[in-house]
Length: 324
Image: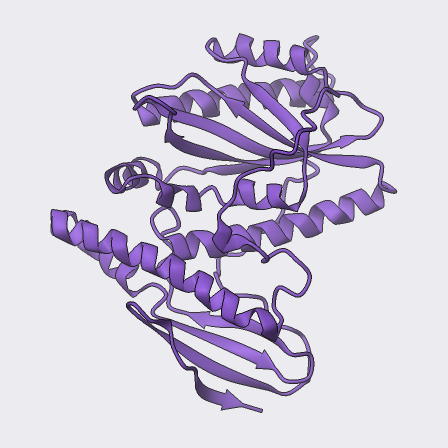
């Protein structure tokens, strides 16, 4: 397999750092988590301020509803502090579930999806006696001025490539594809303005499993992609580490990196589209809708504490609301 072995790592938000590492829920990390949540909440608040100043927040009943929910999101958090294991879990929060607009909800969804897929992938690799590698693949199409047209072009192209894989897996047709060598994968669509231009740059980030004995012929895969897209042969593939999970599943958080007008326009164009998909061994993974952490199944005593957000101060002193 021709893989870029350089030191460049997939980009991901600093607010997600540490959430996949051992001890992510320890008491020692609680202050760092609260600071991260404050940063995300403040980004959302600043976006609401922009919408109010420009009149977008009140231009129609639907917009008013959206921005009221976004304004309230993250106003309070409830943590359960387990007194023996000294772990702390987010068990309650005011959330808007507007993941393409809200940095807080986007971050929570990205972290939870990362953890679930990491558990699934680790299990599959263990079942294979560690005979599978995890790779990080990026697919792109030509930049363009029309965001929705470029998105549908990219989506149609990936569906065509995966259809070729499925046909080969099922013994249909005579066309062979390098994608057949992947036993499973999960991917997300991302969007940003192209470097040095105002055109949209849509792309796919994918995590995929491949047997150690198999080799991807990258030049062959690039030609397949060009034949399908008609405008791009740009594919990059490298071995994946834990950061790659966050790069894939932080797709919604990337919307907050757009300028405000682009962010609002992209939200309205793509809010009803499915921006994450999977195939092969990674199909059928159940993904939670809640932004809170999972509870710990333990009889140990705990204390529940409430944090309220204040502009310029973040999440202040906690209020104990229950204990056992």
